[in-house]
Image 1: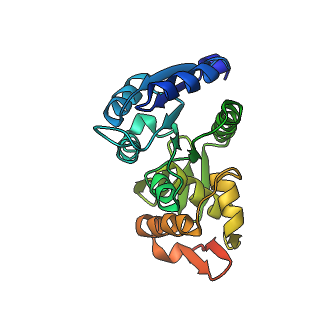
Image 2: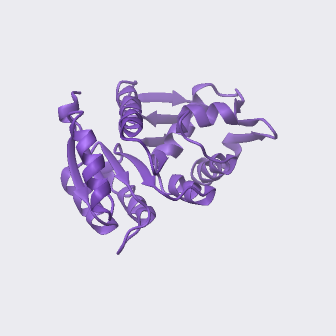
Image 3: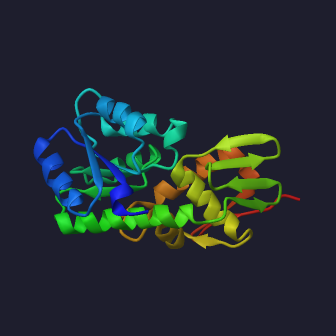
Length: 229
């Protein structure tokens, strides 16, 4: 995929941010679209089907967290990357962002060259995932990478991107204990700084949707996926 084929939606209520970020990304050849609040973001996302959304948190009418949650419920946007671009640097804001379904959390202010680098890194992840095999079978579970769907027997389970990536990582080697640092690096990327609670929250959600006995906590180390007899 060429840069000219990639659509990026910028969402911020500050015109200066839209102008500066948009200018630098346009120079890389990306197609840029903008919105000034969460409501516009959801409408625009449905219409243009972006590959990546850069989303502010504090906005009028609908904030970024709610907008992200709504976008993550839209089936046609399951493969869209979402990264928060926010001045809020508190851990709880980052956790809320990832819980809402974000792929990354970038804090302002950020130098344009660094932002462009992060965008390229996100898009490389998207390309890599698109090139993987569509289906992986683990025990009685089928992982459909094209549709981000888990098939457990006859049950179809739809997972947000980060839950899906975490589940895919754990099931890649059943029985192996994945350390917390490894999980953060593989699922959230080296450039993202989040607390350990983020992993715990996503594991809890996977247990609720797929089954508690598939996941084992190794205290002080990490998690592993356990095949059922």
